[in-house]
Image 1: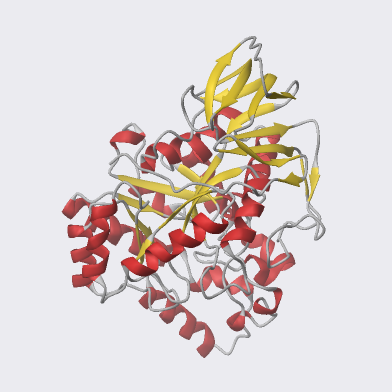
Image 2: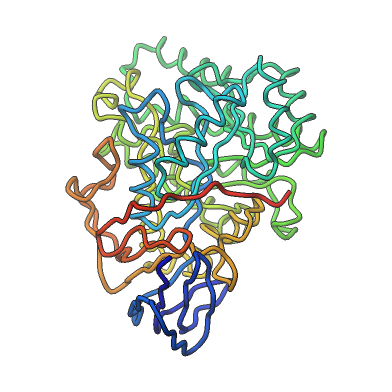
Length: 446
């Protein structure tokens, strides 16, 4: 296996930025030192002026395979991911068919092994009727990232709204439980009220239909269940100021039983952006009024919010028509999440060290991922080189998502991803992909 020596780079890791060399050998980080002189078959990369980060770990993506491959595949979206510095992902079960059985779950792992350029794990899906299958996942604690519950509106029969089913899952699951928290009853009421008014609905109505109150009610319910059963709960894509009262920064992350995630689009967009972008930024939970974004940033910086993710959810442009009610919810982001956050580093909103903590270290700690998420000797060499002297303009010509579009088209971001290593393999370097080696199944210490 090819060895690599990255020279004179700025390593960003565990709260520090320092200049060093790094040697990759056998898929691992063999050595970190101020001056490494390697011999033999070693490819040297000049990292002077660049930043070396641990690869981003995205704990929430929708890569659409099987069954929805007109939108995306594990191959296409993992390729976009590594081009954006994402070296590992955890993918959701709302495919066709939904991941309701252990056989369907393992089928997705087979697809990942055959086609993913990044490391991968897949959530087990839940319904009101597959509790026995869900509990079988307890035997796979070291190789499955978690169990996903849609506690709000979803597709494919994945909505779990039966209190008895929820109690059985929270009471019986030994894995991390990841929840999409929205209140289906309240959403339907809000929608019908707006329809009855005779108003022509647009994307700007999305945060009124999926408002702050319904998000809070569902998240509060999930927290109550987790406390009742001492479950390991992780609430995905927090979008409101009100929900933040449910989370604490009084414990180290490793000791928290209840954690929370914020997504890049809720940190970047507000309801003011519907006027320009319309259904392109329609997603669930909705992008909401600006005061929510302000509160989310504060909670991220003070550690009430633990992780930054994408909820990457591609749809074709045909599935984003002008009619609000027909437009699918979700937007593609995995290729650009790191660059988006580097924009906020450039603005001074967040430090490089804090960004790396929330996109890599904290994800590894939260999910107890084995030997990834940090730049440490002996760890898997999942690494990203970033050049902040360059810029990246997002255009149709460089978008790698199968859906072929981004809500960020035309935006210039203040950095460029130059190299991405997955398990020591340089899968992406200066715009060129090496697809000869695939990513690995993530492993967990539980």
